[in-house]
Image (cartoon, rainbow, N blue to C red; front, side):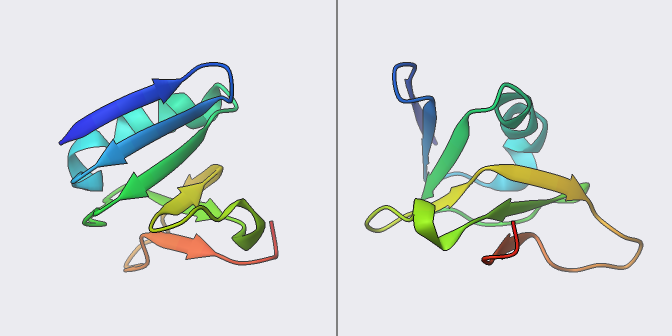
Length: 84
């Protein structure tokens, strides 16, 4: 896994990441009002559902800007929709 941080644009890029291993770290960036962009990721979140908006899309990546707690038994790890 690799990570790069663009402070000026407030974006954190993760490459080849397993979200289950960096889940709390990602949430900390989101709490700081930063966007997180995943390139080649495996989504294995256990505590949170990461959420994003299609307008934040960047080529060959998934961009998230918020999160919520997972509900009991919920299997969804990421939700990209226009509802946020």
